[in-house]
Image (cartoon, rainbow, N blue to C red; front, side):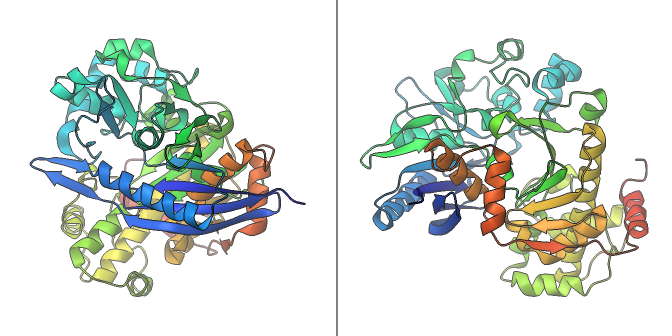
Length: 479
């Protein structure tokens, strides 16, 4: 009889969270939703926070629902977005709600820290791209606060939730690698960096690897297994590639665009292009760059009010191609706020016509995002020396047929879209492997997914290269 395990994957995104139940066997993976909930920032006075206690309550409700439906549940794994953290005092109490990475407290901090440490040394040590919200810069911004003075431990979001569930503290390495505090070669905390940055070393605790035991949920007796706790690390596990010659786009609020490598790329060209080397499952390197992603569209839709996304995208598909373009990676698009107004301002500044309807704005956003995908895929290939035969889009963006087709056209490569719930699937597969239900490396796990998950295929339009090349020259004329 084929051995089978049922596991729960807790997957927290910047806009929503879910508790998924996966039945895993050597024959395939079946995924079902136990609980889904919204997630978003809460502004208290002048600071943007995450509502961590509500997230914990939602996760607990989801696990209870999963156990009620599946009393044979064998394990749970937790993943979330990167860089944000909670501080615990000596008794393990949370010292205030975690601050949201889009909060303005780090404005100007990155430049000061980089000037102190040196950009070249920092990249050679951590291999990480410079983003103003990296944990290093968040901690530097908070260094003189009473919370940091009282703190005995820092836990990233999935590790904080795991601690509340089990009472056992630890920091999983794939998410730790996004903090800009981890040595890219040893995958251990960089004591030298922490000392040179003037941060308290006591905040950084024991590291875990995907597959390690991480405690037991109290009152449930449910084992917790460390997974690729950075959601992109789990999503990349579930990229259903047939060979190593692939690029991936983990597409949701952010687009994480890159290739999977055995070793980091630490060249001057890589640093100047602001590519990052994050830890992946099984010792791999996620060589990628953050692209602003569907956040620009999500925030625009919030400004417009109740609009049907399918109708909006259908209208966008009828708009002229590559008519108006913006650089979606412009820092102006990072904070919450009037996104259509910012797009309009960018159009005026670049001498382009301002879109006149939500459908026209949406076409501008999706065209611009596909163009950013093109640049990131081609740079990742050139900087790493890894040839790319196909682009895999996983996550929520895999549902967006217009974006998938435009990405194929822009990259001049076939696009494989799916699975949509890649992060939960990757999370579940790492748990199942730790339980001994499935075996082998990433290629074996991906082969299992190809047999059981729905995928869609997009071929690049013939003759599209010239138009996209011209579009890139318009948005980045000096590159």
